[in-house]
Image (cartoon, rainbow, N blue to C red; front, side, top):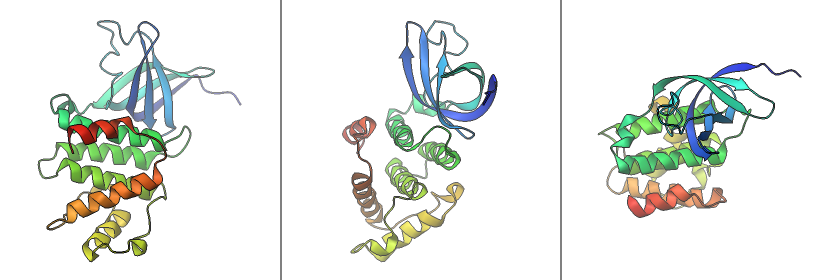
Length: 219
């Protein structure tokens, strides 16, 4: 099979790492090709035109050269880089956790469009004054587990109250666009957060560094 020399994808940078003396290696979650690795020559040189593109949370259209074993960035059009995260350290910690959990689940050449949309909407949720960051995290986690087929069925939630079971039912059935459009009374948010934490411990089989930082700094 002969691969095309160039391709264009829409996606978000969910990982950014130094490579060599001046380059960067990006992990990009794309709508078309799942999670891919993209090298950006010279991205760490002062004044390089890709310096601002080769960074976490950047969402846009990426034109790539397809090599024998890797992709290389040729051009990029930034559509959103979630600038508020640079000024809101608390929100940034949550955002980095969202990226790491997405990285845990996603694979190259898989259909990861729903996960990409979920990450995008969750980052938007962090900017909303109407939503608590912890609530956004809880709903993000549970929906991620739904997408990946890992969430415990609502009928097996045992002692959880009717409102928590109803919230889980909503998260399961809601579109991602409407995912954060509900609220819980009294201590419902805390109960839902504890449920999400229990599910995460059951499902995720490796340490998430961003989660450890988040729990120390924000929760």
